[in-house]
Image 1 (cartoon, helix red, strand yellow):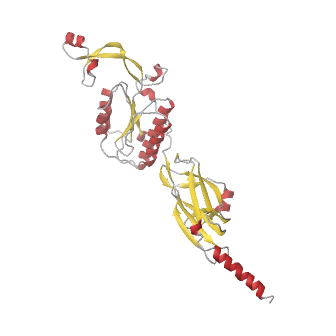
Image 2: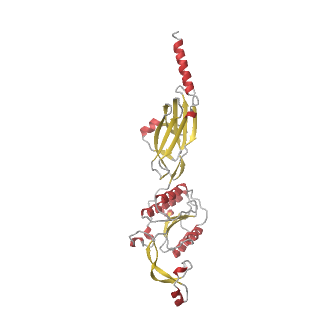
Image 3: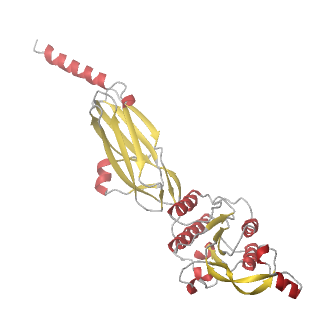
Length: 348
């Protein structure tokens, strides 16, 4: 009798554990989120995870862990890594094991950063359920359905906007200039690009050729960044994208609206300024594979063909060659101020 009671107690306990351990994966839900979808290399972001029991029965054992992508670096303390990390020759994982009461869950965070530019899915999450005795365990894995874009690093070289004719230092508004129709300094020959309203018919009759009014200048904005995405080596391409980010942030600091134009997978943006405008450009920089779709000459002619007023240009090139030099000369002939040229090959 004294033997049967302990045996029955153990049997009942094992039966309860067995029943509680059935279909546990269906009773577990999890959610992951990050506090930033756009970062720069080595910038620390935070992954927040929640694992919870959706049923009215306790779950005796839940183990969950994260296996991060190679581009992800966990930025927790050594003590935290020793307590939550598991190392093998295949991969490193970070997680914990818990007991979940009915309709309850656990929450935690993992600080991480991305090592280099690119679009990164963080990795995989592994869920293991069962009992502490290991009699009935189940394991599933899922992709962490989160994507973080890492933009390019800032270049050490700050673009010298004074190269745009040296005019910014002469106006306190720190803006590019465009014609003021109320102030006429003189007259110049008609090139075919000016609107008909600017033609001076009196001067045209005097000189026998079409003449247009040469206006004085007032502050306004039209700044275009042109990026040549010609196929080149990876390091040079990364430096080029760094220059793009540096130039846009420099203009943002001066509150100068700008547009971006490329002959590749940076595509084109409308003129603008502000956090939303900058975010969109930096996202494109992070997702770019530096793919070229058409020639730089085609891009230059397309952009200059849509100008309706004065404009300043910043040209960013991976390298300079006779073709790009001809394009810059073409731009200089049509720009109101000298074209600012940044060459990533010179960054080295």
